Image (cartoon, rainbow, N blue to C red; front, top):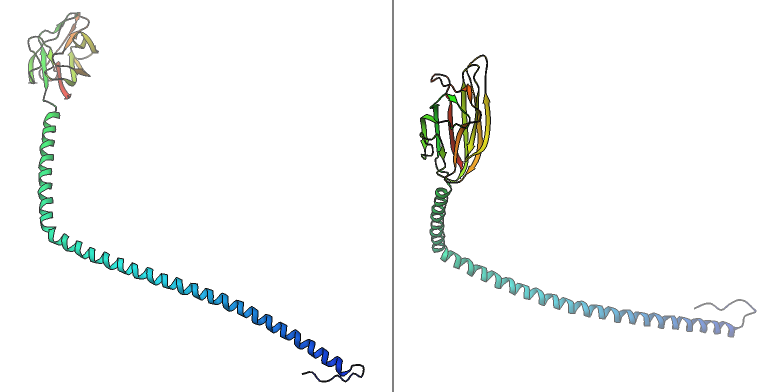
Length: 251
């Protein structure tokens, strides 16, 4: 409590009135503090209630998850037991099925290999029946070194395809010095490749090769494209073979 003022100008009544006014103001302030505290308390209580409800929901969720985990573990144990019981018979069946599939695959592969294997067709002949050359003459090679598939005829000098496919043919041509040879490989009258052979100083040889697709029955041979008395072939059994040959390389 404030002491009574010593100021002579102030009466006792004025002093008491001011004290009373101060007390009233303090009472209003206290009431406001109480009111604010009450509002805060209510808010805190509401928050605590929400937290409690949320906590209860979380506990319920955790309990449900625990139940689901236990059920899943029981199902897993049951499944593992069933797998263990059936493991032996399952493995036996897998091995049996695998062996059957492997045998079928091998059989199919062997069938495919047999179907796609290129047949052996090849020939090689040399030693021309005549050494002099005339225009259009078919060169007949009378010494046959090989004739797998019997496609080459020593009578006509022509090769007739016994199988359809891609063939490689060659002609190896030898001439004496100062002699010419003009030869070509022909398929049923159509020229596949031409060559000329000449040397003024020595007897020499040259080779020509060509690829061609043939159907069964089509014919290939060597033919003189230009003949005269100065055009002759030469074969020396030790060094030079005038030859004609070919092979099926893909069917």
